[in-house]
Structure formats: C-alpha cells, structure tokens
Image 1 (cartoon, rainbow, N blue to C red):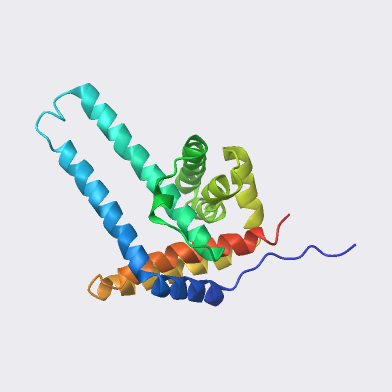
Image 2 (image 1 turned 90 degrees about the vertical axis):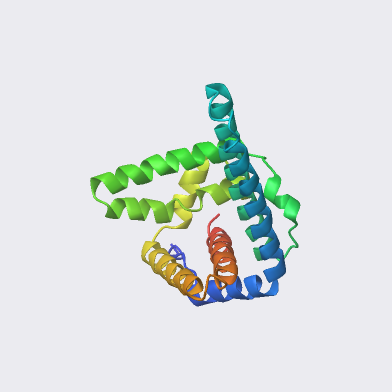
Length: 210
C-alpha cells in the first residue's frame, strides 16, 4: 500500500505569485478599490438622508441591501483572484455576480459559528478552525458546492498544514503592516497581494486532493 501524499504548499512561491500579480495589475486593483469606495460612499450618504433612519422599514431594508452588497463584493473579489491564479483576465463586472449567494452566506454563517465556539472554548481551536475552514467560501464559488460539502472539503484540503497556514497568515499580516506604514500607499500592493496569495494556496491545495 502506498503512503498517502502529504498536502503542501510553498509560502515563498505563493507570496511571490501574489506580489507579481498585484504589481503587474496595479491599475486594475486600484480601479477595484475606487469602485468599492464609491459604492460604499454612496450607500453611506443614502443612510444619512434625514428621513432614512426615521422609518424602521426603510432603515431595515436599506441595511439588508448594504449587507447583501457587501457579500456580493466579497464573492466578486474571490472570483477575481481565482481568475488571476488561473491566468485568466478578470473584469470589473466580476465583482457583481450574485450566483451562489445563499450558499455563500450559509457557509459563512456555519463556519463563523464553528470558529466562535472554538474561540469561546479554548481560543486555539478557534484559530485552527478559522485556518482550516478559510477555503470553504472559495469552494462555494469555484466548485458550486453547498455549505456542508464546502466546509468538509476545506477541512480535507488543509489537513496536516495548519501550522504552515498560520505562518503564512502571520507573514501576510506583517506585509500589510509594512504597507500601512508606507504612507498607506503600500496597501495598494499588499492587499491585492494577500488576496491573490490566498487564492493561489487554495488552488495549489485543491489540486492535491481528489
């Protein structure tokens, strides 16, 4: 019987791919930032309209719509980063596809509950759950999985590499701190770098598991 191949990824390779992608597509990513900023500036202005907050129904519907828009953009960012990893050309329209919205929301809620339980109990299990369930949302978008299947698959493709994922997360946090220190300008590179790096690791791990 042959031994099961251990899952692995190279942190340096992943970060380098993220950096090269962010650097080569800086104009595109700035465009994404501008679009997102304008959208949320507009929604913020709308919520500050005098009569908006006085009507409970309008207030509730408005906040739900803003929350849904947040989720759709979050999904769009994952879709865009996966396209870069697959060496495809993304477009700004990729930000606004709401396909699989319900499954994405359910996956986020279930994963969040699991992580919170882990944090409340012993903290460390919560961190482990967060690392190992991180790719569940990617699976919903990339493989059109339901919440349970996506969570199980994310758990499977991160087996035995929790420590490596933790170190990668620390490195990405440090990189973004450096980007922040660089008069915030560095964040235009480090934030896309982080997002693409995560997508790269996801794709690398998924390719090793049937």
